[in-house]
Structure formats: C-alpha cells, structure tokens
Amino acid sequence: MTLVMGVDSSTQSCKVVIVDAATGAIVRQGRASHPDGTSVDPEAWWTALQAAIADAGGLGDRGAAADSVQAWAIGGQQHGMVALDADGRVVRDALLWNDTRSAGAAADLIAEFGAEELARRSGLVPVASFTITKLRWLRDTEPDNAARVAAVALPHDWLTWRLRGFGPVGESPRGPVIDELVTDRSDASGTGYWNPEDGSYDRDLLVAALGHDAVLPRVLGPDEWVEDVDGRRVGGGAGDNAGAALGLGAGPGDVVVSIGTSGTVFAVSRQRTIDPTGTVAGFADCTGRFLPLVATLNAARVLDAIARVLGVDHAELSRLALAADPGAAGLTLVPYFEGERTPNLPDATASLTGMTLASTTRENLARAAVEGMLSGLAAGLEALRRLGVPLERALLIGGGAQSEAVRRIAPLVLGLPVEVPEPGEYVALGAARQAASVLAA
Image (cartoon, rainbow, N blue to C red):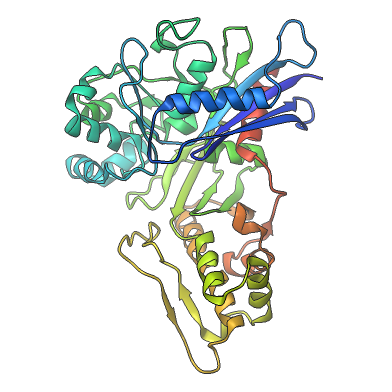
C-alpha cells in the first residue's frame, strides 16, 4: 500500500488524512484546533499542523517503513496575508479572509484602477477578503511593517514551505530560502494580483498594494511537484474550495453548493469568467480549469434562527417544513439576517412577508426558512448562469445539507438535480488526491 497525506488547514482547525493512494481510502487521520480571531500568528497553524500529523500517526520514515507517507499536499483557507521579512520571519500576525479592516483599502483600489480593469486583470473586484486589500491596508496603516516585507505568502503556501523544511534561521533545517515558496493556481487566483488568463503575477497591482515589489510563491501546475527535506514529493496544494471540488470529484457541469455558517456556490468550468460587478469571483482551480465562485453571508444560520424562534431542534424544523406545501402558502422569508454579499446589501435585514391568518403557521414558517435560505443560494447559481457557466448537477455539502428538508426541497428551488455526498473531509481528501497524482507523475 502506498500512502499519501492530505491536509486541510481551515480557519477553525487543521485536519490531516493519510490515505491509500490507489483507492483513496482513509487509513488514519488527525486533527488539531486553531485559535479564534481574524488576526492570527501563523506559528499557531504550524503548531497545529505538527500536532494533527502526530495525531494521524506521523509521516514515518519514507525509506524504511511500509506505512510511511510518500507524498503530500496542503489545502487551506484562502486570502490570508502572511508577510515575511528577508530572514523568513513573520512580520506581523496574518490577517485572515474574514478580517474586514481592509474594506477601505478595497474601495481605494477600485477607485484607482476601476472595477472592470481589476476584474479583467485579476478575475476579482477587491473586497476586504482578498490579499491585495490587506497589503494596501498594511502599507497605509503600518508602513514600517510594510517596508520590512520581502515575501508574501498565503496560509497554505507558508505551511507547505515550513513542512518542506524551510523557515527562519535556527528554526528549520533548510533555512529562510523565501524563493522556495510555492503555491497553486487556485490560491494564487484569490490574491487579487495574479492573472488567471496567462498564469502570471501582476506586479503593478502588487506594488500598488504593498508599495514595493516582493517575492511571491512560484505557481506550480497541476502535475508539478517539489520535494520536502526527506525527499517526499509535495504538490502545490489548493485553496479550500478548489480542494473540496477535487475531493468531491467535481467536473465541468457540476456546481458545489456548500451550506455552512455562510454559503458558497462554485462551479468547475473550462472557461474563465470575468464579472465586473464582483458578484462572481473568477477563481482558477488546481487542475488547470476554473472555479467561478459566489459567496453568501446567510446560510445555515437562517435555519438556526427560525428553529430558535419555533423552539425546536433541526430535526423537528425539517419535519415541520416538509409538512407544508411548496411556497408556504405565500409566506416568504428574505433571509438577510446579517446583511448580504450576494446581492451586495451589507446593511439589509431579514423580512417576513405574505402573513395572513391562514399562512402564518409553524409549518409554513419552517418551510419559508428552508426556501428562503435556498433562494439566496439559487441567486448565486443564477449569477453563474448569466456568465455562461454550464450547470447540470448540484452537489450539496456542509452542515445544512444534513437536513432532510433541505435535501428534498433543494431541487425545487435550485432547478437542478441534486446529489448529497456523504459527509467527509473533502478539502483534505482533495489534497490527498493531488498528492497521489504528483506521486504518479
């Protein structure tokens, strides 16, 4: 049996799966928690990665042990800014994707370049999530720290670098060789200064953000690999959504609808998308194709809120929803409890309309909650359709997909055949699949 390792270094935790490269079956796995917050010392991720690998039984001795790992890859949260100095040390805590302090910087970049130009050059219209805005915030708010930046990495890039044996002087066997940073197409496409059309960094956009040029990770192709300190092959990794698509085996025509705290709708496409409105982020994937993505703020929390109002658990909420007719007798929930990103209505609130003596029942309210949440995600599908992305099948994942009502109502609202894969660590499994691929290359 040939073993490979896949990692998912997410916002909340680090998950490790060690799998049989031939079958994809999980042989062993491990996990470790990450600290809360939107500004985090990357050292915490490195500590968690080592702990999760140990929890999974370790990598083993590649040359001697039959149960040792032969190749690995890391998937992880996108957009986080890991700034390094010339000695390979982290300049300041990393700003995560969900840190919104750079919203003003995003507006400044759009004012300088124009949304249409930025979408053409990078596939993205800047919002606070993206790395380019965090670098501009650093330049404007912490100029001394910005001046020290010699290299910029993303969370999974930096962890790959560290696990390959690189790092600050005295803390790593291979030293601070920042030119050895590597990444993949999917994570590079979430920075705001990489061009999905020709696969190159847009140095002018980087300089406009940071104030000077810097070392950026080399972007590995789908079958390219580097080695760690022990000679194992290492894949380029993936951003979390691209890793999940790979782990699910999604292909052109598939759209993944992830129902977590927030919602994401992303499709595998052979063609690049450009959306000057910023609704659809024109990401690449890690296989050489593209991964246009729409994010919503209100997903599973919609069900949480209505279950709380009704005083029921999620199983009973599902039973009530399925007891009502489609359309909930005209009762409609617009589910913008925390504003909304798609459509871009940051100050919006939720509303309940169509209330009559006949329609206002527990069953109809439960049904309206499920239909309202799914309608928000359906708006994401419609945005993809408008850009010509082919949508033939929806893969429903995330905690909200475990609701029977969601699974049964989704095809009616989304207008597509729906499949619900078994729950799994799909980002880590996608990284493991990539590791198996580069081992065979």
